[in-house]
Length: 190
Length: 115
Image (cartoon, rainbow over all chains, first blue to last red; front, side, top):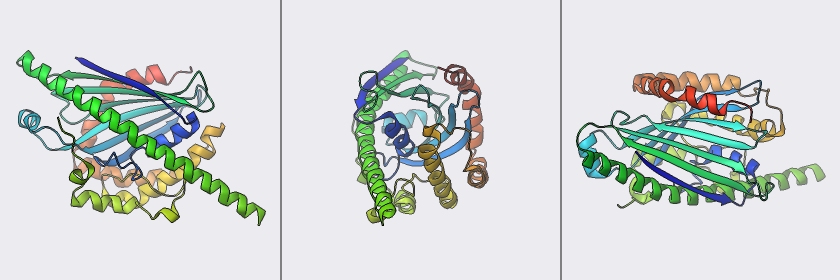
């Protein structure tokens, strides 16, 4: 098993980040064109805690290295199952995702957390990400290592791109929400 | 390892899907549109309606403490009806069931509790 982890701080409030998070893969994000579908499978609010639990299916057209395809077979389209938990009191979003495609040969489990930062809670949000990648295929350890290493490399590259893309969504989101507020104000005044 | 740029990744089919939810910038609104597409193009319209409803509920009610309301229930039911048919046809429903069994009870135990 290999572990990839990273983290950063976004200069946006948790409310903004957790709202924009639902649109992370929208067309505003020009860095996420590999995501071709985001479908909600279920959504419930726990009456005792107020925690919002959502199951989603994320579909990607990922460029997989040719040599991986030749070992694992299959196509470039892959599905990811994601369960997320929004705790509105603690101001924390946790998203756990796992790969559905090639799950018999490779297990990728990722946990992403967005939480209100402790230093300046009103204006910044902490992001952390951890992925556990395990090659399950029988056979040579060498090949397993290679598959795991390539997956971690890919994860690292995508994490950077993902952050940049999400920044764009956050920026657009803030701008558009601001414009909306402005419009409402004008409407109220007239 | 090289990452393909967006141009290379966008094939004809994807552009078609993106067109559905891309709207001109003068119409941009935080609560209407600009959502990701569904994997089932025939569900895009109802999905867009549901997503829009959800985002409005999330930002205006849920985050302000009104967690018990469920404004978008009817839209979600329609969207799910459309989506489930496609998931079944493509065999994705079985994959999802497996993933549920192997992981989500663990994460539920950890993250559904009061913090």
